[in-house]
Amino acid sequence: MVERLFGTNGIRGVVNEELTPELALDVGRAIGTHMKGRVAIGSDTRTSADMVKSAVLAGLMSSGAEVVDLGMLPTPALQYFVKTNGIAGGVMITASHNPPEFNGIKAVDADGTEMPRSKEEAIESIYSSRSFAQRDWRGVGHVQKSNEAILSYHNAILGNVDVESIAKAKLKVVLDCANGAGSLSTPRILERLGVRTVTLNCNPLGTFPGHPSEPTEDHLEDLKSLVKETGADLGIAHDGDGDRTIFVDEKGRYVYGDKSLAVVASAVVKDRGGGLVVTPVSTSSCVEDAVREAGGEVAYTRVGAPIVARKMIETGAVFGGEENGGLIFPEMQFCRDGAMTAAKMIEIVTTEGPLSELLKKIPTYQLDKRKVHCAEERKERLLREVCEAYAEQRVDQTDGIKIYFDEGWTLIRPSGTEPIFRIYTEARSEEQAKKIADRCEKVVKELLED
Ligand code: MG
Image (cartoon, rainbow, N blue to C red):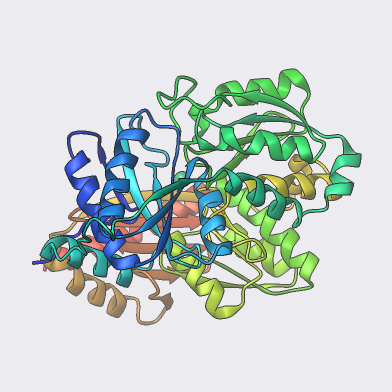
């Protein structure tokens, strides 16, 4: 029996409880055995970074891997280094937005993208069968430190935005890195862009003393008030490993990730004179509305950033992303990129005007979220039955079943980890969303009673 190690976000757990040095060592051995070659490693700012990284390093080297240690850096900076240095892959020690007692191990493919499931399975199979490559004293790997990754990442970002116009605009920005890995990178990018930056929680501290490292509205109260108090043009917040970015407009208002996704998607499509934007089926229709208005098209995928990235590669999309602030720019790399998102939004505000004005053009929808209990073995049949029940409607079966109505849509999706179905409904008004959700929930519950 092959043990599943990687979840949707790599391997995550509480340090020294689930994520022990023994586990990290064996995962390192399995990754090194699978990757066969030079491997890059880096970490976010968590207090356990050195412990977990050292164990993974020992495992990688015992399997013969030559390792480049990039130190502390944002996940997309490591991904960019892997992509541009022709090496076998990367390992990032991070638990992204989880609380400080967590850490994690994330594997990156040779092209810098998050590792596809098939390759994770190959690593899991090596781990479960303990068929590690075990080199003798002549064959063990070495570790070499490098501090090049951040600089080349910055150069690439600066090459993908209009630095001259940005510098001329002399914008003022408040930047909140949540004491995470973005602290090592984004303040320096903003400096090179000529943006006047007020930093908040931009010293790397793995206890996350400022606020928890998930950029939700209630964690960004200080950012919101500082934007207002300093009269800044924009507030920028990263999650713990700097692959996601959330914004605050110049009035100090939190901007939901679907809205910023729509603003950037619209600007990119306009700039390219059309093109395809890729996003998961769960994304608000405000993104499709904005993209269509700008002359582009939207393609939907199953939920998950690596799936969005793969679809973008397959279709030659101009842009893609998720509504949690994870935006993907193909001209840079096929993964969520927090600093590129920040630089792009600064460019958009510079050329198109204040964020609050841009947001006025994005339609607002209301979301109704609920869940229904459903036993694991009943899930597949329920999905089929829901599909039959809505045979007359337009449906999308990319991930669960999304049913389109005149007033909005409902997404009915089985949870991958719990015995529940999630029912997400979106409509123009709260009442409409509730009405549709009530109807769908009733249908689901009646089917379950059979
Ligand atoms: Mg993250």
